[in-house]
Image (tube, rainbow, N blue to C red; front, side, top):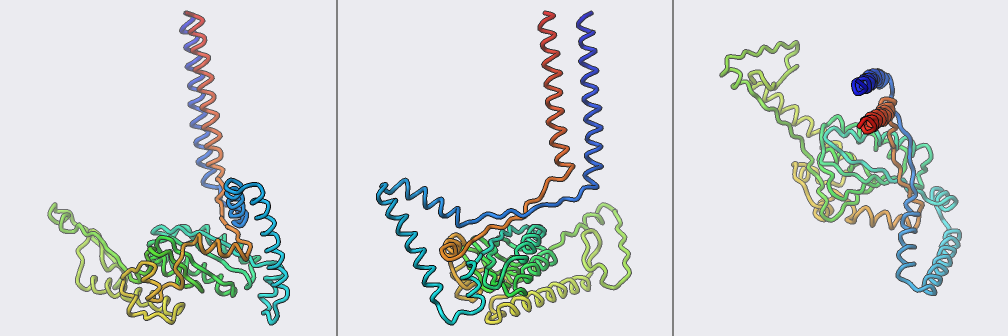
Length: 354
């Protein structure tokens, strides 16, 4: 009899937990619909990272005397650089400002997918940078993308154009790939730096649509498509396509390609656009020979060079967890603890009965 009494209590507690789960999930879902996902800017100084690495390495491999002598020589070298900079004459206004407070380099990352979804974070990073950056500074974007939808990468390119309009030097570094939409973004830069085997180019447009009309027709399935407007729908996935529709579709692709070529030519007028805008790709060194990039080196090498003469900052927009995510995590932890307590109590009671 004692067993069934304890089992009833255990069952009641379990049901209570399950009901609590349902209530919390419902509340979290409702809150998630109302909550707006926001974030904050995170900034890290790359110079400190490089200095720490060098310090750790030299401390490990050098003797104590060598290490002290090295540190003393570096301090002396830094003082001499500062004195030399102050003595420079005929400096531009931007150069004077850079010497007064030091040049700053802001590093952003863009890892592009087919929808250019990284644009959401990049637009926030650019807005933050433009609030403090001066023409004496520089923005470096480490860009990796094989391309994607035209409107997505068009918006991403427009975000980079905000930097150009403020007369702030923009450098795009490509370590792996900047093709199609990726190059649409990269070509806006004042300077494109590419790793030797990075894939560059693919200035072209492609689209493909599967069509299962014959399969449906074979199985006596009819499809009706009604449009208002001659070119509201050119090609379809399930309807019967016409040669007229195909021709209009090809023309749309050609028009988009011309727009792409015009965009690249505007930002890199020295390019032989008809030679490079055939959809082909080139590796870094070949891309340099064809005028698609300006320098061949990795982003690491480029940033280490900048760190010798400027303060280099990584800028990243970190998305905050929504209320839904926070409540979900809290609920999950609470439920897990409750179930553990109930199970432990039940097992302990059964042990005592025995």
